[in-house]
Image (cartoon, rainbow, N blue to C red; front, side, top):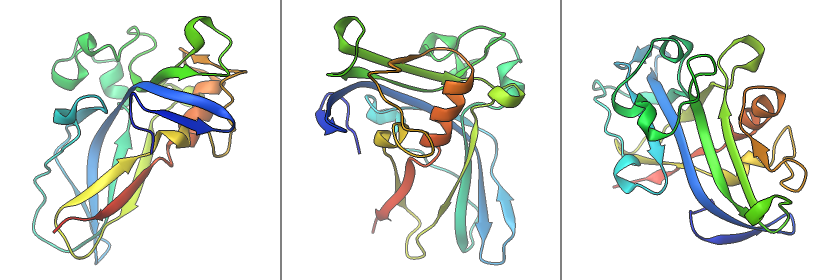
Length: 198
């Protein structure tokens, strides 16, 4: 897992993450009978630099659940619904325009291989229309022994997967399109459940 403001060696590249933010919403659970239980729709902006944003308390009906599902990103309806408040307020710096919509996830930092000023890389991933859609449905198996658990998001997954993202070649992504979709396909695999908490 990459932690902001720490340096890492990855693919012979020295990386420092300065900003790591993403939206999650539309939580749903599947119980041991395979019944789907949808929770009230809420939108959360997770910011790795703000510990107040990284703990979510969900009002889950009593039961035994096998898995949890959620949307990584902001659904198309909210992208075209005008000015939003709360986590979706444009003042959070996660919104482009009413045409391009929300930035679903953002990763910024520096890397030794970057060819742009300040050795920076900036990935602002968005797009909600048809083939440029970067929202992703996430499903995770739940631990059976605890009502409380920790989900981690590993920023390294942005760079590996079905597409090998090389900062030296592609240090910037700031618009919907093929590269944004490829990165979204990678980071869709960044979540895992760390361990039950007693």
